[in-house]
Image 1 (tube, rainbow, N blue to C red):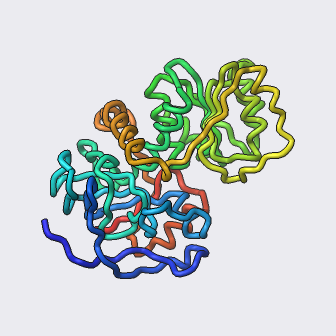
Image 2 (cartoon, rainbow, N blue to C red):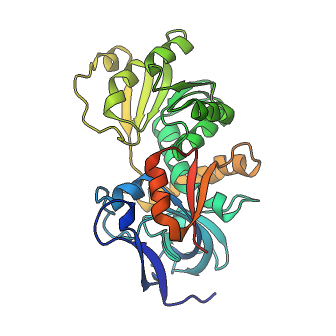
Image 3 (cartoon, rainbow, N blue to C red):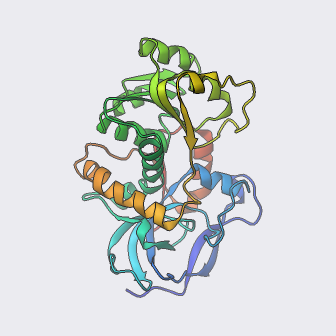
Length: 333
């Protein structure tokens, strides 16, 4: 499969709001050793894209400066040392950057096949969220069947994946969400209970729902405003897993005593700086455990909105408005 020498991609000259996004033409990246070149059909929109556009989340050394952390499409070329994939294979990939483009080069280890029966749009919705949930809820959070978890931001892309994955794993799931409609959607996805955080104190509700025991794991993307209550929401040997800081990362006046009294673990991670080997290990775990759930439709992606990539600024505005339930996807091909 031949490909052109140049491609269109999304760019921005100065950090700012969604209106700074524009289009440019540049060279198609050449896949390096261990990489594949993907002709992009669809790309997911994620909060790190928003932060990068604002100038607050620079790409790591060696990564593409182009926005976009997940893409689905067809392999157009393989670099040296790639034996698992072939030109023409349909893959979805966790990208180190560059997905908002007609072509993106990705380490082969970070690619997964489209789950059977999935469209490009559905496949593109998977990598960033499913890699993140697996690494944090299951690897770091050590969530076990029979345990309970509180997931903040239940209708975010992370949230809708985490609810379904945790429930399919055999855990009891509680969530917070910002409206009655969002709470209803979370229960529909498998949450035992959803807490409307604007009207209810989530700590009081978790204590009530668990007869005072608390939960085994909290998956949090809010940060500072929730930190103290997150610790008090955990039962003995509980784990707080931090994956973002939408409310800020510096918390004041936190009582650390629950950590000692209840032998708590406080952990967290980001995905982008991880090595290819680490991301490849997560991909292997997903293919073994989660891809069968997707192919049997025991769990499934939740697509909030699909937009042509010419409307990328609108897609970013939708993400910032936070009224969506599920993933926002750009169609490119």
